[in-house]
Image (cartoon, rainbow, N blue to C red; front, top):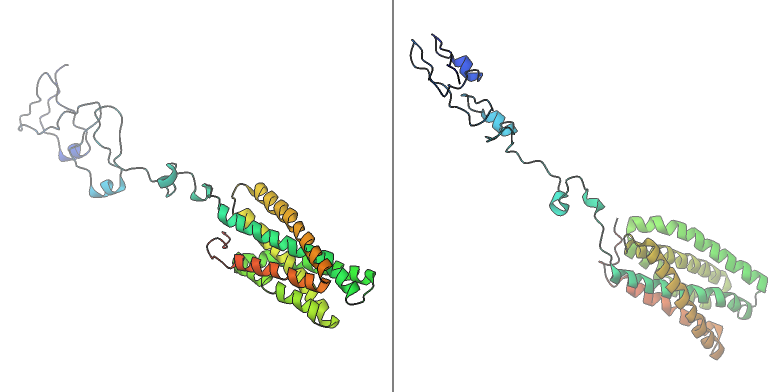
Length: 286
């Protein structure tokens, strides 16, 4: 703690603004023949103090350090957080990465629609060729070829139905495919052969379209469980849909193939009612 250096001239305003004036010694105060100079207050640590206050621009930019009792420098400006930090506490985690909650109610409704669709499709595949042979007098080979064409038309319709449902929505897509199925099947049994075959082709197209749309929507209801959704929807639909063949077979034995096919026309009507019952569960999230 030696003696502080004396100066004949007091510290200039420039030196004060540049914070170059040393703090006074604890042993003797500095003297000047010109007059007592106003020296800066001693710092509590080793940091340099300045007589010039922080400007308003530097405060707005958050570059002025807060007064520190030690060597570290703190900033009063809080780090910027992304909107995701309000939910996850992590600024780097995007909102889209958070898992969505499963929609079980909507999922099981889609499963019911797939069961009804499977029963309808299985009965058409089993009894439509027999109807053409016994009621229309067709050759078995021609009836089998007609069924093959119907299935091929269904494959093409399935390719078109998926992108169409993405554009117009699942609910509208299902209703557009389900509503005409019942009347078309009735037209197949009532109209002449020239008009009945186009009705059968449209039945095949609508049946496959329902399958594609409902299966994709069921998978969307269980985010992160796509395999489970597909397994339950496809397995349950195929297993329970096959039961309809037994029921319709008994109807055909008790009455006729015409009566049995007309009874099958009720299944898409029930499925269409389920598809149009609610807007909230039937909308496919994107």
